[in-house]
Image (cartoon, rainbow, N blue to C red):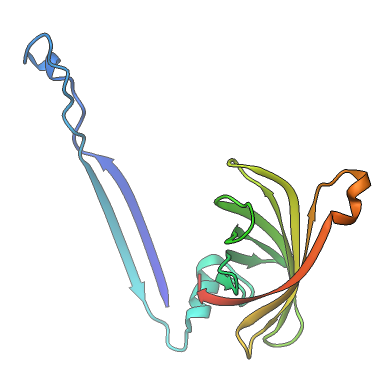
Length: 179
């Protein structure tokens, strides 16, 4: 399957001060602007293409990991993989996280369908700085359609409280959409 979409947003009306149009000295009401959204699409199907094939072609992906994933706690990540690198966004449903965070990582294919992968999220964005980082290491089991991970969260503590710096646990991610 191939999709090609292009869109543009064009202003076809303007905001003008009614006072400039001779409606009186005190007229300050603005006329609303009007916008036209133009969406053009081309659709073609190649026989034998799966949704994963389509996503890989669309994003230039080289693995089956791209798409949106959700873990058992409802945290979500959206990733793209290319040339051994994973990039994307992570939105946590737990803790003190606000909005989405960048994620970066690496992957390697271990057989025809399964992958080893790892990624990290620094919990700092334009909304807050939690002064912490989480790293996940896991296995994508194609037969199960899941990524099983072990993670470690490091958060800044004073040297006297270093023993409180790290916590670890596991997550299982299930794909909720392709690309």
